[in-house]
Length: 333
Ligand code: SF4
Image (cartoon, rainbow, N blue to C red; front, side, top):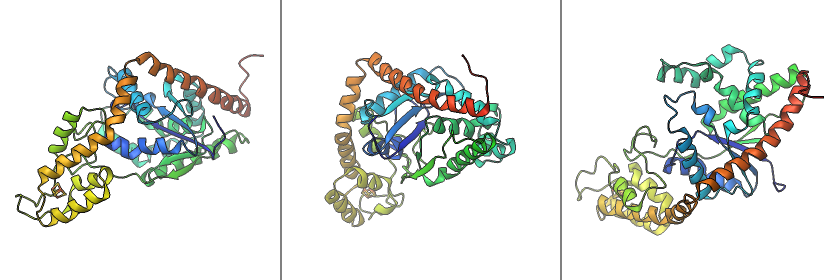
């Protein structure tokens, strides 16, 4: 890695093909951060086990997600891209950090309570320790910065407190407290115009979809619910199609739609067709690159294996300090 402003870590669960919400909420930022920071991007497959009912698609989802990350512009020659379970040191650090974490602190976390509500039949041990594993993810690589939305601030504060507890207990500076790098994470609504875009709600638009599939999805997007007829004036400020136009269309077109929608000069069908065309144009080079990468799956896995190799080097250096600070017996003479 070249000398940059600092080291960033971010992880995401292997959810397979990514959608517009993933793109606007994380992937775009991942790409941009590479200009100024050493970036470590991790597909956190172990975290996924806390909630998955089956793991049949885990490997394929990992691959599909890696394809999307690489096609969008994450550069493995610069950044480390890898799969969490390929660096076993993270589970070792998770165990060690769990010993300095009061159980009550974990069970009091709102995210844990929410999970207990959403999956009452699967309140597993890993679910309780999830924030500890997340802390291990970050501090194992001595990442100083974690890009998060403000709503995730409590997670980073938890990681900072855990690091302080460990360093204080073992009188060491082996672990560093990560800082938040607060990023604007837009709330991207699904095609229902109501809920956050997500695969589980089937209200998403996949980045890797074909032009035709994308257009079909866009044409089913909910618009201003008060605009019942073509002759009714619309309200762009409450319309999700307009919100998307602001991201993917040129300023002149956005301004035209804003004006014409309010005086019923443009219909929703035409407006959506324009958005679909602009979105497809925006994603065309991504899709071409993705298709090219998909021709050689072994090369994609090799990127992940090489990333894991580099990540393990960083991880092992940290673990040597951690083990020494605790006083664990060395593994060899
Ligand atoms: Fe939304 Fe466009 Fe229809 Fe106006 S014309 S309500 S911005 S889809």
